[in-house]
Structures are given as structure tokens and as C-alpha cells.
Amino acid sequence: MLPIPAEELNGSGTLGPYWTFYRAVAAEQLSRWLPESPSNILDLSGGRGRWSAQAARAGHRVLEVVDFRRAVDGQGLLHDASKVRQVRADDLRFLPDQSMDAVLAEERAMSVELMAESAMDDVARVLRPGGRALVCVDSLVLGMAILAEQNYWAHLRQTDEVMLVPWPDGSITRCFSSGQLRELLTEAGLEVEWIRPRTVLSPSTVDHVLASDSRALTWLVNTELEAHPDDDDTVGIHLVASARRPC
Image 1: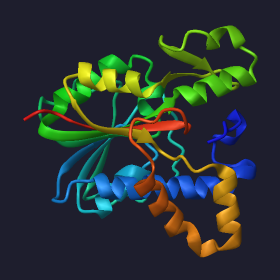
Image 2: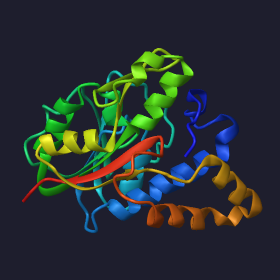
Image 3: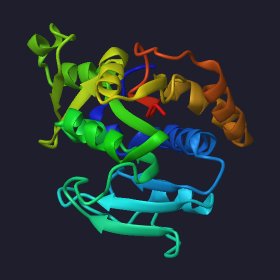
């Protein structure tokens, strides 16, 4: 997939149809990943409510952690108060060991959290044996594209090391190769089930198909989720991983 300009990554601009497709892919991926039976789920995805709301609609009980360091903009807040509870916290020390059946770290949570190793250790601690984590991070491809946009050519030489990327808005995120993401998960004691790009279809392909037939969105989403190979970090702006705590 061609690199996407940093100013387009907020879901607006000329790539609006692509982001509609992207969000549909993410929602379907979560739907397929969620436990079949009602479970206790921890949502670390930044407090916007989209993922916790989807999990609640699927019958799960969700604890959504809202980080003091992040703004809560109210988007997607479709909470069922009986199934979603919000708590503000800087870490997970308030949770006992093995108290959660699943953990969601969507919205690039482990890229925004620069001390990702410590955060993932906490995720592993609160998961029950057999519990699973779904993690989304910025990819190395995205990081290199943003550095190139800003003419930070010298920073592109060492891609085996941790890549901290300054964004035009002044924030910093951490970008991962599939190998680095796998290492993050395994060093926390989790078993990796799969790692894959969130999307491999290019914005131009998506726009062309949707312009030809607006009803093709479901077909595009299914094509995306069923066709692309695991562990391919040569395409896609984000990587998604599923990992399990050993029994």
C-alpha cells in the first residue's frame, strides 16, 4: 500500500472513502476475534468508546481505561452502562492478577505508549491463563514514510532499532516491524497467534471499487481479511497482532 500523508491519518481529507473501509475492516476483525461466550474485557484503546461499545453489544462486560494523558473526544460513545464501565488510570496497578479474559489495545495504543514493554507486561499480568490480547501498532512502513515526509533521511538508516517518530503535530509515536511486535509480545510471556497488516488494499483500489459499486464495501472487507498473508510488514500503515497467555 502506498504511504499515506500524515495529515490524512485523522480519517478526514481526500481519503474519506478509504477510512470508511478501514473502520469496517477493524470492526469485522474485532467481531471475529472476540470470545464466543460472555467475558470480562479490558479496553486500553484510548477512551473513545468504539471498541468497548462493540464488545458490549456482543454481550461482553467491558472495563475501559481512559488515560489521563489522552483527550476523550466523545466519538462513538454508544455505551451500555450495564456492560461498560470507565475508569481513569495511568497504569493497571488497580487490577488484580488474572482478572481479565481479553484485552483490547486498539487505536495504536502500544505505539502511543512509548514504554510499551512495561505496558505489555501489565497486559500479560491481568490476563487469565488462556486469555487473549488484540494489539494495534504503527508499522515501520508508516514511520519511515512520515520521516521521509519531514526530510529526516538520516533516521531511516537504522531500521532494526526502536523507531520513535516525531509527527508534524509535535507528538511522538513508536513504530514496529512485525519482528519487533512479536518480540514485544513474547517477552511479556504471551504466545503470538498471528501478526498481520490491518489493510493491504491501497486507497486507490478501495476508491476505485467503491466508486464503481457502493455496495461493494462488504466484499472489500471480506477480501481484505481473507486474502493477505500473516507477518507481512512490507505494506500497511498499521500492524495488528493477536496473542494468548499460556494456560
